Length: 439
Image (tube, rainbow, N blue to C red; front, side, top):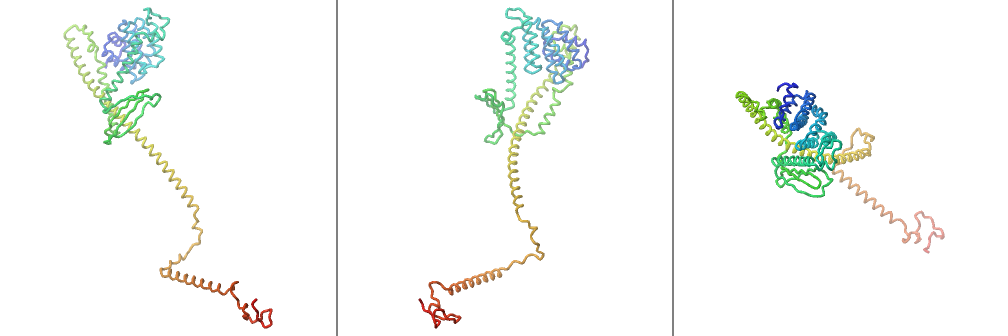
């Protein structure tokens, strides 16, 4: 790419036209030389003030392209342009026509939607152009800008609103086309009562064939949209990582081709410069340059188209992978809760067993038996012991019955009742002969 000089910058700014190709090529060249951002912005503002009213809007388009496309490289241009944009908007709005008004409003609307600058800065720049906006009677009020009601009712404001609506519509159409090319079996329906509810919920179900069905539910006030995607297989992390690594060598990251495109002379993209051709050699030389530029651009555009399709596929892979990880996380959390309950139950049983063991007698305190325990009796010995115990029991019962017979009872007559001598031979008191009579 050619080197940077202030003279070359002024020459390129002088040759700047409103074609998109010229603005994009010039923007890439400026971003490549972003280390000279201060000089670039100063020269840009100086040339803007000298430009005609029809070219001033082109300068603003150039600044817009540089600011948006340089954010990935660094914030140099975003910060540097911020200090000069208020005066630049005022300089353009001072002599602006209807087309210029619409262009300025469109730039501010895009910056607000994409958060290029914060709302306070955008409001300040909008006020700078509103100070020069013509009123309803056709005059320009520089001291007092239009009121809020007047501002919203002007055609420029309405055009900005239409631009916002069309921008959102284009985004939704692009998203719908992307989903329709990569997602099948999509259904949508509407329902009410979803206000102030969760913004997004994802559920999972299985069809009759066991295929996993992924359902993405998005809540937007009272509208409910459901997208069902059949996932044929679980995304392999290695495959996903490999696909992401391949994006590092994609067309949009090819700095060499981008530099070649940025270094193309403006004559190859601006038909108005054909009048500078004076001879056949210059025309043939320009024709060769145009042919080379066409080959480079055609190849680069094809690579960009392939990259876009690849990014769509990777986006779907990432979505499916994240969804699968969320489902795995939910399952792991459920298992964790179950095993925590099991751990608590096992710990409780362990504590009870420990308490039971502590209440058992201490076997170490029993006397030690050095000779060992006596041998167990045989089966015959067991029967002998049982027979001896039975005989002993019968003998004891017989003795007890005999003792009960010999003892006196109130209803049985004793020998003394019949005058029978006692065993000791002593006479009974109360008679002379030692006999007694029954009373």
